[in-house]
Each structure stands twice: as C-alpha cells, then as structure tokens.
Image (cartoon, rainbow, N blue to C red):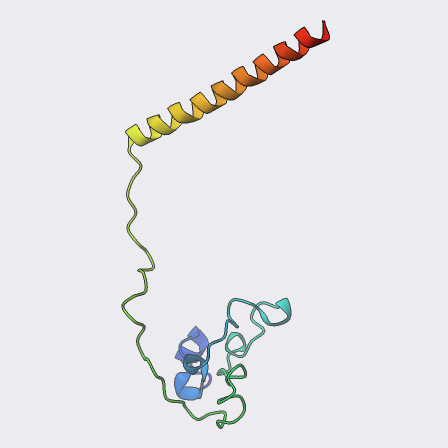
Length: 121
C-alpha cells in the first residue's frame, strides 16, 4: 500500500494498479519534458498506461491488468556476460600492425615531401 516500506524503497507498484507491465513505453529512459523522474513511477505513483490505447484511462486507475508474459523469455542475453581476456600475443600483433601502418604513412608522407621539393627545383 502507499507509504509502506516497499513503496518507499521503490518496489514494483503492480498491486497498487500499475499498468507498466502491460505497456510498451520508454518512460524511464526518455524523460518526460527532459526532467529526470517526471513520470508516474518516478513520482511514486502507479503507471496508468497512457501510451496504450487499450489501457489509457479506460481501465480504472487502481485495478490491475493481466500480464501476458510475467517472466521474460530465455532468449535475452545475460546482463553481466562473461568476457574473455585479451592475450599478450593479440596485443603484440595489434601493436605491430599499428606500428607498420604509422611507419608506412610516415614514409609515404616523407616521400611525397621529397617529390614536391624536386618538382619545385
């Protein structure tokens, strides 16, 4: 209920009538009028589904809505995926390739400069 420990901690407001699980909006990412927290959940109120035509002010404010998929599918990647480490050999090869590119560019620029001085003389 409003004002309890869960509400103050920012827990899910579904039982208070939040329509968020049934909406497909990015309110938490794109802030309303570029003001952080200026959306119902950010203000501590349940979402009333203003982006959904079937929900927007058609379902009573404090009634819950059925959720099609209560758990996400298994096809989503993990949040903290394990990452491999860069081997010293790969670092060395990348350094050699980068050095060769820089060296070739420097030599080409030097040769281009010599050609320009020869053509002026």
